[in-house]
Image (cartoon, rainbow, N blue to C red; front, side):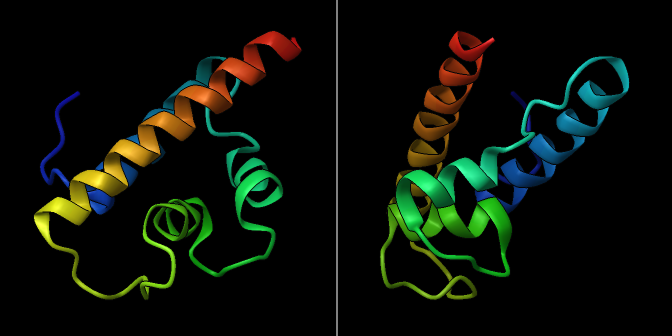
Length: 95
């Protein structure tokens, strides 16, 4: 994957674009991802959607608007891709 920014914001923008394109040709990939994260990991709503949930899971207690160190950013992205893999695997077995 190529993104202009190797951080949560850049990857989020890429995934939103990919999801929109997938929705035009099939089923959106991220359909239900935020709800799945909330139900399985977070338990409460936030106003930042699934990127906020991912950060909350990866870095509990850190405010969403606070700059992350490169090490924290890598951990957040690793967490995102692990959660996304798990979500997609569950979606695949459910159908």
